[in-house]
Structures are given as C-alpha cells and as structure tokens.
Image (cartoon, rainbow, N blue to C red; front, side, top):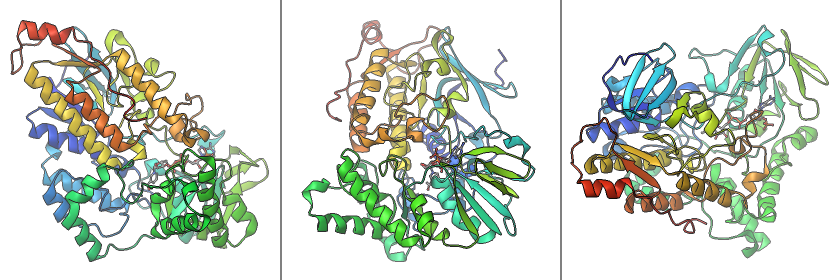
Length: 568
Ligand code: N01
C-alpha cells in the first residue's frame, strides 16, 4: 500500500458538494482535523457538474439554502423563485470563501479506493494517481445523483458529432444554434434543458421512452416582499419545514382524497397547480398509497398536458399512463409541454420504436433514422448506490461495498454500514435524502454525525460501527414502509430500475423526514443504540480516559434497536 503523503487526520470527507462543505465547516469548528477530497476543480458537487441549459433547483431557492448561519441567510440574495445552476454554484463558492473552507479542500483528486485496517483502526484512501491519505474516520459526502448513467447504446462511441451528458456538462457554453439536436431522455434534466435547446437549435428531436409528469414552476424573479418574509421568519419557517414529511413547506396534506367532494378535490389540485412545483406530489395524503387518489391527480395533469399541447398525437404520447404520479420524481418545468408546439421540435416515441443504434450520423430507431449534429444524453444517474460503488471501499476482513450491496444497499439509518467501522454517509440509501429538501437532509445528517463524533471524543472511543442486527432491522423497516406505497410501482431510479442489472430495491426512506429525524435523535439520545463503540488497540487514550469498568460495559454493550413503530 502506498505510504501516506499526509499525516493521519481525524476525518476525511469525500466530496465538496453541499454536504462536504457543511461537514468541513462544522467539523473544523468542533476542532477535528478535517480534509475534504474532491474530484472536481471546484466546489458544488451536483451543481458543479450539472451545467446543462436550464439547470435549476426544484425546491424554492429561499428554502434550498443552508440554515446553519443566520448571517448567511440574511446576507445572501436569491434572485429567482427557483435559482439557476450558476447562481447555486455561486452560492456554494460564496459559502466556501465566507467560511474559509477552500484551504482544507484538496481538488482534482479522485478517490479510487478506501480501505479499513483492523490493526490500527484507520482508513487509508488512495487516489487514482496512487496518492494516499490516512484518517480515523471517513465521511462519504458523495451526493445521491453524482454517477452519470451513460447508456450502452450500440454504436454510441461511433457518433461523429458532439455528444454531451447533462450530468457531465462542459464548462464552455455549448452553442446549439443552427444545429440538428437529439435529446435522449425525458426526466427532470431533459425537461429543464429541452425548452432552451429548442430555442436555439435548427431542429430538436426528443427521444422519449417514458413520459414523465411535469408541473409548471411558474418561475420568476423573487419579489422583495417574499424575500423579506423569509428573512424575517427564517427560524419559524425552517422549524416548520422540519416537522413535515418532505422538509418542504406547503407540501403535506391533511386530507385523503375520499374525504373531499369532487369539487373540493379539483379545487385542491388546481390550487397546487397554480402554486406550481413539487407540492402536487402530496395533493392528498393518500396519493402515494391509494391508486384511486393518485389517479385523480394523474388524470388532472394529463388534462393539463392535453390543454397545452396542440397536436393530439404528441399530447397523447406526452401523457404518462404507465406509472403513478410521483412514483418517478415529479419534474418541475418552464414551458416544457409548450415546447412541443414549436415547428422545430419533434417527439420521437422510442417506446414503440426503440433506438437500435447510434451511427456516425445520428440515431437509428427501429422505424427511422435521425441525422444529428449533437446528441444530448439526459439519461440520468446510477443513483444513491452508484457513487459509493464507484469507489473500491473495503471494510472489515477486506469485505467490499460491492459485495456487501450486491443485492441492494444495506445501511443503518442510511448513515452507517455494518462491517465498515468509522465510515459514515451523508444522505445515504435508507435515508429520506432525495424524497426531501436535500439541504435540510444534509444538515440533519451532518449535525447528527458531528454530535456522534463529539460523543466518541468525550467518551474516549475511536471506533464506531453499526451492528448487523441494527442494520438488518433498518433494512426491513425501510422496505416495510416502502412496500405498501405506489413508489414501488414504477421503473424508477429510486428502485434502481434505470440501470441494467442493478437490484430492484426501493432505496430512499419513505417514512417521512420528520419521523426519520426523530428516529435519529432517539438513537443518539439513548446512547447510540444499534451502534457498538470501542477503542482501537493502537490508539493512545484520546481526551477523556474511560474507566476499565466503563470501558468493559460499553465494549460489551449490544444496544437495543430503535422503536420502529414510531415511523410506520
Ligand atoms: O434522469 P432520469 P434525470 N434509452 O433518470 C431515459 C434530479 N434532478 O437526470 O424513464 C433511452 O430522471 C429515461 O427513460 P426511462 C431529480 O431528482 C433534479 O433527468 O428509463 N432513454 C428517462 O427518460 C431527477 O429525478 C433537478 O424509460 C433512456 C431519462 O433518460 C434526477 O436528478 C434537475 C435510456 C432519465 O431520466 C434524475 O434526473 C435535474 C436509454 N438507454 C435532475 N436510459 C432539479 O430540478 C435512460 N433513458 C433539482
């Protein structure tokens, strides 16, 4: 193994996205020697890589921001209701510089391998250039959607024109003007990019396999009054958001569909449509459990699509019929459906006539050939597990994460993994993450992990590990709450269904962000139930010396499990 080029640190964080930045701020403030390792040459994570035209957040800007610094909240000015990628990236850079984080981030370094050594209880991380870094703890802040999925379409490398993936977009502007462009995919990235590409391109062909439900953003400049409202009430609004199932205000509903009259149902759907954005997801509180309730919202959106799209056949093709609304991530758009009324835009149905191959000239389906200058792959990500699996992570006895997760992710709370001591994840599989306002989810995980590390420091332990029993129970619980829902009724990336060969397992925790937060707090309040803590043989006592009795008591402790019924 390569010798460490740096001294052994307390903590290495992998990834300088929003999770990595807050981790660095928090851990440094708490006195831990921390280094962040980042593959890119800048901060921002997902917001660094996803630079495609139209990229923006789908949670409103005022809420899609850190809450840990009141002065930051007050000083930063968001200009639009849904901020565009350059503004979000500018925010990430502002936070980095404001809190002096950059000096502890090592850029342009791809972590290829992470190995735990039992003899000294340390992790060794090795870069693809064989640089080696040692630390007591590793925190994977990799993001859930950071491993782009480039489909294995025959001939894809033969294409003679320009080819871009939305999740790996070039830094220089891509000029589509006068060009014949094909976009493959119709998920959130495509839905944001298509209207802008269509404005420039001579002709745009959209290759659609599965239509998605998209709700208008009604994006626009943020007026002073709503900014003032947020800034004057940030503490109350954040606290309120934390008590919701998604961390997003105005989302939860008190009513199941059947409690409302048809008029009331329609009014509620219309109110949410007029408000715009993700809140359509929860128009009724049984929308993701009762197919009839879901169908009310789904057919409402289909009617809206048919009102917007003039050509009947195109409108029909754009209407999702094969999955419940929200079982694939809802898209939030500006003029997506309207774009199909343009003369220079064609919707190509690759469900009926699949893409057979990509040639040097363009795309060939089973029905036709499309000559293209540019192909945009808006084909998504190997979500949630992909970023972890791209690193060769080895825990106890050399067990690899690849083997451990071969039948789907196994975690405790989405934060820790049995057999992988001292390794934490932020927004890992088995946590609400992508089903919630991810900024709040990140802050909750970072705060919880930081508190846990402080607890260990003050009690003299330096090894923490999720127990296999706690992990088993958590995996069962994650499945138990997901299985009765409609989330499992579609071929979504939540299910891993978009990646050939990936196990079909619902990966996020659907039991609600507020419930989840309570569960995590219960675990820590009760002395980190489900975890075992110990001292590494090779480590001198750190800070507090723990008595032999106390040491023995804690070493041998098999903690009881968190109460599961509080979330079901
Ligand atoms: O990816 P997706 P995305 N041949 O997986 C199609 C977040 N996000 O990058 O559905 C042909 O949703 C695939 O078709 P199908 C957000 O959470 C957020 O758009 O598998 N087509 C689908 O249409 C989102 O959900 C924002 O049949 C192929 C598309 O490609 C997540 O990222 C913005 C194919 C992939 O859609 C992922 O979104 C953007 C093939 N071989 C993204 N392979 C915000 O607004 C795949 N497809 C915050």
